[in-house]
Length: 376
Ligand SMILES: NC(=O)c1ccc[n+]([C@@H]2O[C@H](COP(=O)([O-])OP(=O)(O)OC[C@H]3O[C@@H](n4cnc5c(N)ncnc54)[C@H](O)[C@@H]3O)[C@@H](O)[C@H]2O)c1
Image (tube, helix red, strand yellow):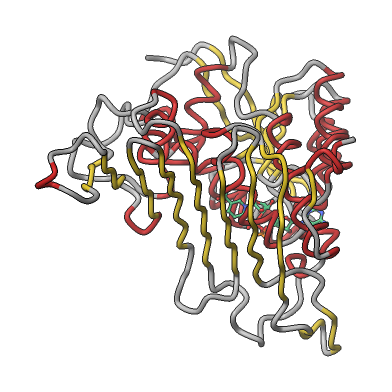
């Protein structure tokens, strides 16, 4: 299929996600051809030499050192925000004001007020808006959501999410935006936002949380001076869903030799489903209806064409990787652009931010916090 609508994208930020998004825009039409195609036309970054190099490496012809110039360009239809969370709301508000569609990396903001401001700006401007909760688009995670929605696992009673990373283990890592709460948010909002999104997507809203947080390495080098770390290295939370589901979440950037190991598990009245990211092409499932001789969890290959988010991918047995989550994300945005309905949108981003804020307040106040307390 040849695209008959080209959407020109300006990517704000040339770090890991700026480059990952550029790659996904190029690859998506090869996997899932669509009548709508995204073409990155410009990148922005504060360092001229670095952004020139990154844009050339990504095959993007133009670059600027101020994201405001990128937004002002008449040949940019979509602004793609790939900068630290503390910058998102300001960039989104400016992009919405200029009438551009906006795609933003998670988390929507570092606090609920900024997330609401970002959401309200795009709604008031009537532009499309989507947030990068890409892990939803992995076939195995999507299959789990489908099994929850169809009731195959019965009434869900328990949810368990963990995300272990070793990003902050080394005390010699210098202070950067990730350690500054107004710019990087927290480990809860960085890693937890993905888990909370997947949880609420499958199981509905969260009412109350009780969290604890720790910062093990309290100071880091900032250009020869010691600077206090402002974010948690690790947090754990108890979570009560409106539906009555009971949940637990653990996020950490202080887990040696655990690079990006996340798990999501649901236990229902009729079955269990377990996803573990290091085995991202698999979903482990077990049902109370199974033959008793097969008692236990069985490994399902989430690669069959009948399963969600597998369209256009390699023949069964070849598997997919992290990039599939980003390529499927772009393909899904292309497929829904004409309907003016992008999902998950900034309302989802703001709802997730409310839960993150509730967990942060709970950890700081050492008490249960209702999400209503944050939202009202
Ligand atoms: N969905 C995912 O899988 C995933 C993975 C990693 C990061 N992220 C998210 O992507 C976003 C960017 O993360 P990253 O890993 O690419 O970061 P990064 O540090 O690799 O890149 C950040 C970019 O933003 C620029 N930048 C930094 N401070 C800025 C400022 N004050 N104003 C304007 N630009 C600024 C940097 O120059 C760089 O181009 C974050 O919101 C992060 O949470 C998402």
